[in-house]
Length: 440
Image 1 (cartoon, rainbow, N blue to C red):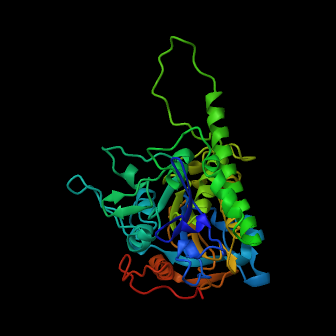
Image 2 (tube, helix red, strand yellow):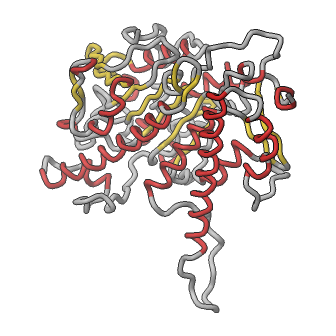
Image 3 (cartoon, rainbow, N blue to C red):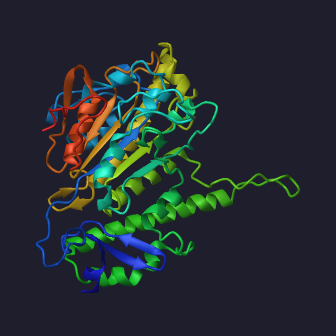
């Protein structure tokens, strides 16, 4: 079978002109391109993703109680109902070293490190290397992309105010170098699929590898054919949605001739939900293809205003609703915005759980953390951070429950537990050296 020879390292792929399409985990092919003489592994790799949203939550409607069939979700978390058996709602966690930092810049930049930001030092930024990048240094060489950092808003790089830079990143390669995030789904797509200098821009990825895909389908098991069909369909759907976004941009009103034209802006979906879901789908594809095992996604930069008028009843900007001053008519809008973000997470988790790998699903073989650097956006408190944990960590985590940690338990301890399960153990993070228990 020709396809069995299409490997790079331990990765199986389809190759076209200007295109490399890495395959998902298939039982018919030795795990991720291992030699056919070796016994195939039945254990797919473990993945990690962190999602960040700013501005805290409406605390009265956040949380959960119980476990298993008695697991009860609050109003904000209700969108997780269909997937709640694979979710944990922890409480009591925080970042002690960020308590004294400014509400948005410090809480954002330190979300994945627990290390505070500092004022400019010799024209350099100063914060902590983030969890995702620490793990990428250890295991990132096992995949084409060491990590994938995505968002939907541009980075802020105002040289006279470095707080804007701190608000723009949760992923930091070093204490002074953020890991730039990609916000354009077309360019993020290229990161996963394109041979950057050779890709034929107007040709479908799937068209480029059509013959190889057809040949492969004749040599794999029936379950793998179904899995491959689902995977290729998902690639096609993402392509189509990106094309639709491009066409929508091309059809926008343009000024009459003679009016000065600014530089061409980047075209991206104007619809917030479509933009977010495109990026989430790309993370799913990246994990499924084993292009990377580490990803981050920012719903917004820290302290953003955010227009959510597309939600029924929401008339205030996001940041304004977080400072609701206990006014019920504003608090209900704050809650609606919080719930919308949980809906996007639910969409992502259900997509992950629909993809079968070996004895489980992509979600079963992953660890997903979503949270904010603030708890109460009205008071800018950071005790008992609003967090959602999902995924089975390749059989090492018991989900479908709450975990009530003692008040002010260091969140970096949870990150150390994640790093251990990723095969990238860390000696310490933000002065914490002991991994947090309670997940098993």
